[in-house]
Length: 410
Image (cartoon, rainbow, N blue to C red):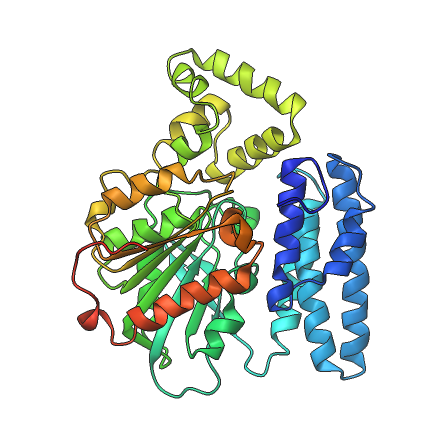
């Protein structure tokens, strides 16, 4: 699906930003007039124009808030958040503009959700010797414990973005308690404390589930996890080692990060495993010179994973695989995939399904549905309906009433 740019990563990020219109995080006219001002493939232009749109939208939100037009202000703040997030996207970790842009992104989100009828609790979740920041949304019309979903972001997402990507308004309307948080390698922990990614996310999610126990809106027998993008690795990994998870959604599947990253280069990838590090690094440097996508992937990967070189990154990515682990999952699984996904090839989905032994439902989204892209950002209404319809059925009675093992695909 092409929106505006011929540069693939620019066009996909445009679609991603516009996708959040579904849940109040964008307006198509604001998105399209912004990208019309951006020079093809120029990341400096990308930042400047998205920043301008974000600032203009934030000013409109401030004016509405000052006039006590709270509903107008709420939606404007949420749109400003999304536009600041997009403005930050291509900045390098060392760029002095990155931290201030992120801070505006986070603060406008908080200003927006503070104006909801039931604002979320801001929570600090235990993690080793520190905490992880999060938001606990509780459905205003439900009293007592009920089903809960924990949303896990991925390689470049923020906890705040998950409000739109995971369809939190839809979840709340169906009576779910929802937890969003940034883990190591994400959001505030990466930007403020340099906490980088780790493969054993059961050690992240486990303490988070512990921290939910005091909240009366959480039924401990009906906890589901939704892993978005690279979270499609994190969520199944947590489910494989934590029996308290009653349902798991891989949105999209991401069971083997190295194989996904090398899928488009089937002849080059095996060669890179045999050549010296200096050659791997030289090839990566050459690629960064000629491709804005390659440059962004390498820069962001070094930052997220805490590595210095392409050779080190290649070895690190191989640690993020569910091969030999997926068979441990015993809760029901929903595996989503898009036939046009350029990050996670559809060909790898079947391999993941073959490894799963738990009751499994698979859904492949088609081009003609407008949902074939990565994380179905062309049709979030369809994708989140599939997710929450499945969770409604799967979490209806808790783990004790979950389907018995035996994969069911469709």
